[in-house]
Image (tube, rainbow, N blue to C red; front, top):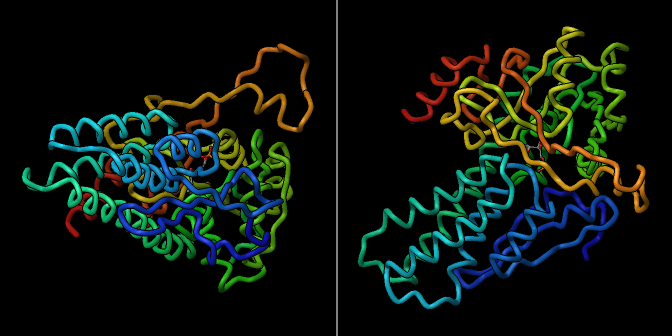
Length: 362
Ligand code: MRU
């Protein structure tokens, strides 16, 4: 266990240690903010479990962890032929893809590794393929780092001059390679506006807002105030925030965006108060194969998260519980999407296509 309270920037959320025979180290996010614990993942099953139990969470971080998980899955197995290697690769990719359904960064990263393997000459030996896939996983990790910093730079002007901003769940360094998406915008703004006050929804049921976002913001000296999720509309009505910024787990071709449950309600409340609602997300979070957000799979999680999260029952035994982990905010409620190539505004299919056309030209 490391010392709690160390800046998250100094301690990476994810770290690959060693070369092809190395392993993945993760900050165990279930232990924060009380304890800063590092977990080693040495097998695919370790990574699978870490993703399912939210040891590592947040769309980009899940994708990066899964990419390294593929590398673990190709270690210490006999791969006598190309066919054997691809059979193992398929098996590992399916196992990791089944961990969480909503964040598209997971399947995006896994497909990138599959395509990287397929692109190699058929005569490549297993060790060369292992090295190539580790390089690809590292590239995904590095790219995410760069994307987060670019998102911060593009997003900060949108918060210029504001006194208060509201965020939900955790879209910070813990959810990405570093710096975050929504929190990147806040960190970049706070450099020139140190008085910016950030309201953080606690984010029921698992409290990613109060446990993780408040912890990260405080590490960086940001003026941070935690509120119950149900206080958000009141905070808007009281004029304490002039913008809302969150991350996303999957954005459809038309800009409808899935994010942590409660995000849609925030967007509705923001519209009612004429407050801009922004999504900050890298291109790896877009799923342009889905025309609208109603096609996004929504993860349902265990009832115990809702009725047993406080170490004792908080509802009658055996009561029915519905625990969707995400909801979809329609594009019409999103003022702009901030991504690594710029700000998409208005949020329409055409504007998103245009932004991707620019990416592809680079
Ligand atoms: O269930 P979680 O904690 O993985 O949900 C995470 C979120 O909803 C984040 O806002 C999203 O993944 C964006 S992370 C940059």
